[in-house]
Length: 478
Image (cartoon, rainbow, N blue to C red):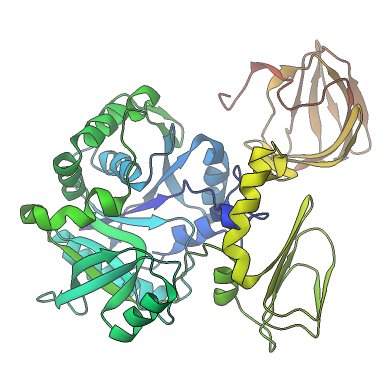
């Protein structure tokens, strides 16, 4: 038996704004340690006793593809990144992954994990996975239920049934239950036979494909066409857009898990209890619960000072944040936005994001620091007819050969060596040297060295938007 990790990494995490943005969501952030949530998920089977496929399958979209590839590279891990042309919820995403896993006639047990969960107790997680793997290898559809430690209204629940013969702790799934109100959640916890629905699943690839074919033939057919016509591009598998867009949108729970009792020949649905400190960090109050706290219950990240404060979270990215006399508060500072909320109101952050989108504000989509396949840039200042950027280019990387209609640029090298294409000239610049790119000139910036290249770019002109780029040649296929 081989376990094939499948990581679903398509969510936007709007309730963790302003740290999480549409084009750089929470799974790509290091919220609880040095690893990002995606990296922590990819590490979760390290040291596992059973056979694990060497390549993790990650299903995501175009926006995140290079950041995901880079984060895997930092871990020394290999991945096959399936690119969805559009979001269609988790069932089509898993179907694409199952088709890829079965591409060469293999039939591994799929371990399906959202990329944005926090699970501190990896040993207990792996113990639950080991039990689930044995059940899945025998054609069961396995989900993992979190043993609740409080009456939580933000999670769905699973009502458990009878024990599963031969299993240590697994139980039959009696019903999936929607998010309850507070009183109902308290009854569930008191009853003892309800678990939180974790959204983590295990099943054989063939079982999932058979179930989708039975319960949603239109979805199965669309995903098969999308993968039959997919193109492989380095680490990326690009599902065919026209075919995938014909797929219905549905979740794993609704598309298959809740329908299994009507088709017992496909395999039974079972739940394995897990008590591993799990959280889906769906909002800032949930993140506060799983983070290490000081004696007063405060959580800090960055340059933070507390005075007479308790049970408060403060995260500072770019400056000192001082918190005085706060209780049960959340303060999140980024270079371009600050959010202050009571913990009981953190679910409402998505309302602010909705307003930002309605007003066309950039803070809903991107950070001031923007990651690109070649590195990143930070727009450190701007005004009428000028913008100043700090640009870092990874070793061996290069930007596209391009031209601008409305702006000229000055480049000053701060660190490293730059290979500059400026019109028909190609030359090297080192620290403290500079060049001028006139409006309308073809140009390119590359890093031929072994250390990151850092420059300051000063743009001037009548229009400074990122869409004023004419690309003539691009390593990354944009």
